Length: 298
Picture (tube, rainbow, N blue to C red):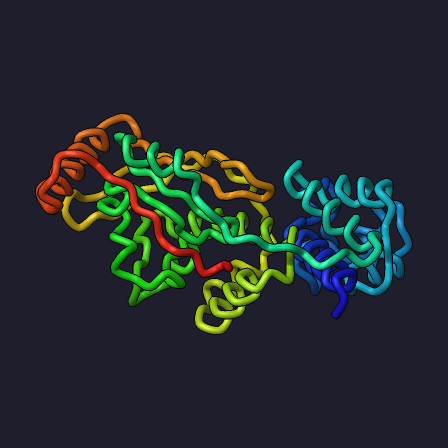
């Protein structure tokens, strides 16, 4: 399959998922009797976007259609896409109109030395993730909060696989599905930028085989450009800790991101201090360090 065909198929799958998510009531339409489909019918989307039903059907099927930006804007309005979804759709569609791209040079993802020093001096948990959510570096507080990554091989140190890993470094979050959708949406954005990346292919393939939960959530075609979130993390020694997280991009396009966890106002401040004290006692030292792991991305 050519890159053009890959993007056309991904565009069609995305449009289908958005159509099935949108109901007639969302758009102020009468649902009508005896509907046999989830969400809107193809004919309804075509009518709202001012397209023929046959043209829209070929779009969803990924069949040799290169929609103009004007058509894409009409579809975005018809499906009430938000700004992130609109950008995602435009990127996929424009890729179907490009000539064959030269071979992609993929360099190993590296953590700048200055970032590693910053991690070591931060008083809150922080990690560095690659574009496919591989864990590249972390500080001791992050290991104490999330589990020590060094106990697992590099290919298992991934924030997404950790959510679906019953035997490995599974992340235990009270709002598990919301967290999973955030990470899946971030991976979906990375995959759209380079769908043939070996790490992306391996990661999606592995999770699709072993997790029905992943298959269900991946099929939603949600996308995220997430820079902020909140979660409650279950910790065996200090209880449930309410944390917020923010993502800070590091140099590169696309490049790694630093995820910084801060306690939500209230008891979480005391819990984080207790966690730090327990970590110091376990390690026999009084300051947090930073550690870097190897990455499987190559």
